[in-house]
Length: 568
Image 1: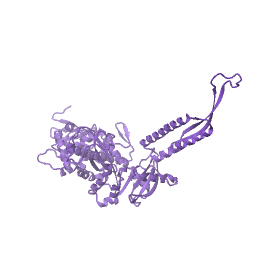
Image 2: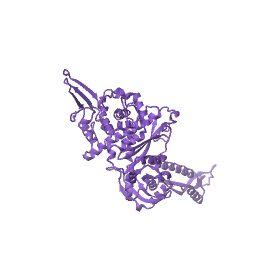
Image 3: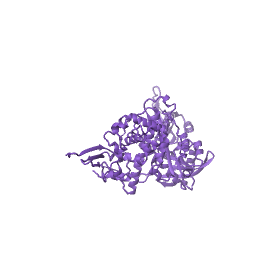
Image 4: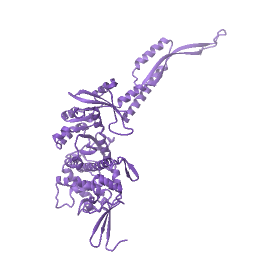
């Protein structure tokens, strides 16, 4: 029942205040506004605030630019962004203007000022950074003339999405503890091999010499080139040797030649049932005039692509043997000696089988034939004649030992590093650092989820670049939420979190934000002018999530004095 003189406003919030709060904590709008050029007296919304609105929309319920204004229509926009801000301020023209300003202000440097200045980064001692790149495919027409003066190009290149028919651009990430502290946006035809060197030089501007003295860079096999190894002559790295290097095969040969030198190290990157268990051998060898540490690693799990290739090789060899055997078995000989000569000749011509045992033997065949014409009455055999021929027959069996040896070899890879033993005395530590590369792979997996990066709805190269960095800032917020909650669960020794009737041991940010889908802001205005604010739909789990993220519920909304946390 509505009381006289009392008005009640109900605004949908979902997870928007949580994301907006973290953006304020990261000083997103403040840092962007400090770098861009804009007229503060003629603009209702700053570029930084507009970019923050894009981030809120991106993580809560992504819409194309022209729909973002409508996304905020039912929300208390002032409680998210400050007094005087309205949903209409986030129309597509204003957002496009903000993207242009952002692109002109060196978004790469802005991103790193935000990321490295975050409370999470400031509390870390950077010792290992994990680098990798991924491609992002785009559809639609992009005029090459628009890219003449652009800082990067949307073009065809090596597609990690397996879409060589589409144009693309690239993301590069540097992860520490699952946080994307370093990021880059590159042209679609940028080679990983030539990215690491320039990235290192640019990051040198952000890190002190003391930081570089302790930092270990972990990268995939594209890192291993003569130029990159020269760049890292006095910097530490761990990488994977490309299979194309002859040295890689040589090191494997040395390892398998001495089975006694294998060291069991067990699981290194995953705990619990089903964790992969590894064996390693540490070696030293020279490459490009310098001596490096190498670790030959045998994994029990064979890469699916290599497993299929091995199956194909075994099947193709079986077919080749079947054909060669059939051709020989059709032939017959008048004497045993000729058959034995034929068998030896066949063996000389077919001595290359790697996955099968092929055994040949000479056998005698006796057949009875009838002579042409009527037999003589005195012929005791009645015209029947026994014919003796000699043939070569074969027995073919899979060589299970050879197949297993090849499987072991294919499941083996080689690490290369120049990290001194004063930093990583045990070779298993190098493997552990390398297997932590799953961190950056998980970040790419999150970045490429349809709800996160689902199409690029802007056309100019400058806006594509700016929007790509908005995606990266969104990924930073995403990773911080996930990092803090999982850290809080470990500290509280909570093994699982119940959300929407299911239990999650390692909840993703997407799952965590779903817990706030029913969150609303209720404003009650009394006749005497008193205004009270209430959060409705905040569950006990939601309160717990906020505590882990370090957000007090009474500070969740800007300019709104909220009572202590209410659930329900």
